[in-house]
Length: 245
Ligand code: HEM
Image (tube, rainbow, N blue to C red; front, side, top):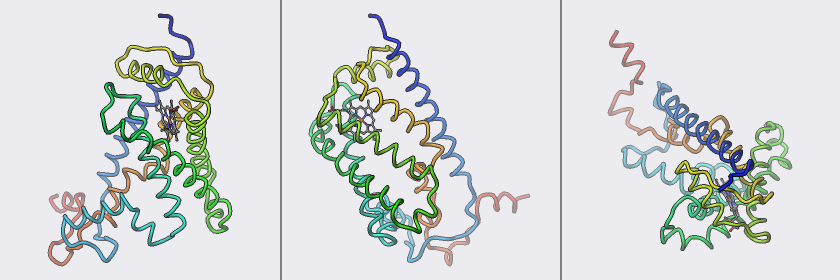
């Protein structure tokens, strides 16, 4: 089978994007892990046991608890976007696994309509950056661009899903082919190709942008520390090493 130039280029783009994403994520997480936390600074009231910290982090990850406490509008749009993204990413799993797991089949319609939540959430977050004076003042071009990129990925996806249709069988064999180093042809569908180029750009930007808050949350001392300063003296790792010398 003759592999088109387009397919070769998209395949190369995804290999490069994947390497940058994986390398970037691993190196940033190592950097986060090794960053000293010299002081006990959990935001109070804080859990006094490790199990309590796990419960606190779970509420952060699932409900965005501290964002809820600080801004209801940002919380609403932020949560809608992330919840919709979560559902739709589960739906997207079908392009990467064969046979498709039964719960991925069940989730398909929820994922599709999750895209509406994503769109509403992103539109709300972008509107907030533009119309709320104090937020506009502290926004940099990258804050806007990140939202615009996510909005464009969402709208091209929705255009295919709700109006234009896409050859999902060929998309799947292309991506399974990428994973098994057996490159297949990708349909020359302009909306699909734009969707994919933007997804690859997102993968490249991810580890070097504010989008890294996803893994970063777990390394935040104000959230992941136990309130046990009275029972146990807190000495950071580097301070322990200094004491030894
Ligand atoms: C390599 C990864 C990806 C591939 C192969 C892919 C492919 C596709 C395809 C073929 C569709 C049309 C589905 C249909 O017609 O039923 C679609 C829809 C969509 N995509 Fe992606 N996409 C990828 C990553 C992403 C990412 C990272 C996002 C979000 C940031 C995203 C957001 C969407 C949305 C919102 C839709 C519309 C709802 C849906 O049908 O799922 N996609 N995608």
